[in-house]
Length: 135
Image 1 (cartoon, rainbow, N blue to C red):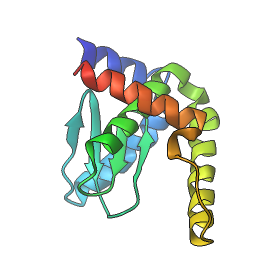
Image 2: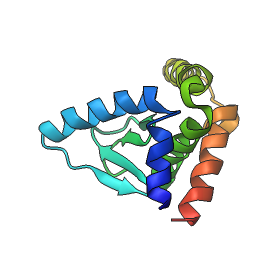
Image 3: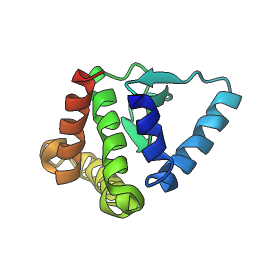
Image 4: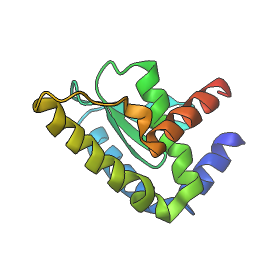
C-alpha cells in the first residue's frame, strides 16, 4: 500500500519531474540498463564519479554508488512528494547551479563547505535516512 501511495503522489502533485524521470528511464531501459529498487523508488546506475540526480520517484547515480548517496537521492523523492510542481524551482535548479559552481571552485583549488550545508541537500539526506529505516 505504501508503494502505491508513493507513486500516486509522485504521478499527481509531483508529475513534472516524474514525467522527465520516466522518459530518461525508458531510454536507459532501451539501451540495456537495468532499473533497481531503492525503497519505493526506482534508480539506475550509470557512469562513474559524478554523484547522482533525482527526477521524482526516479533517480540516477554513478556505478557502485554508496548507500549514503542512494539514500540521499531517495530523500529527494520525498521532497518531490511534498513540494510537487515547486520542486524544480525550490530544489532542483538551485541544487544544480550549486553542484556546478562547487565543481568550478574545486578546480580552482578552493576549500568547499560540506555538501549538506545547503538547506535542501541537508533536508534530502535527513529524509533519505528516515525513509531508509522504514523500508
